[in-house]
Image (tube, rainbow, N blue to C red; front, side, top):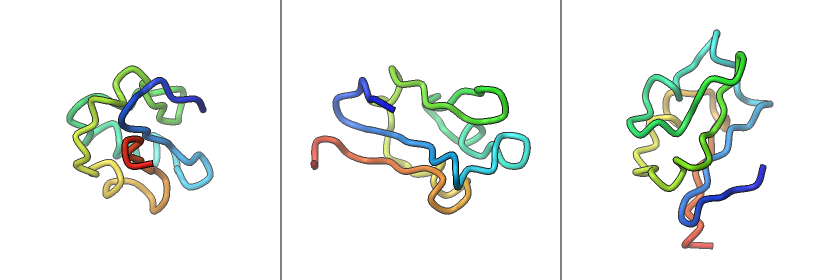
Length: 75
């Protein structure tokens, strides 16, 4: 997935993600709307990635390794 953000990249690992029906934690907890529903899987709203406040609530709410957040400015 290509990123259009300048500072933050949020990725959903579809191998580790169990889907919205079984989890959906990322959609429920993200305070800035980075995720949206795409069928039964969460998708990252690319234009919203730079709104990420690095709270990591999505990482904590979801399956281990299902979501990663990378700071592009620390590459």
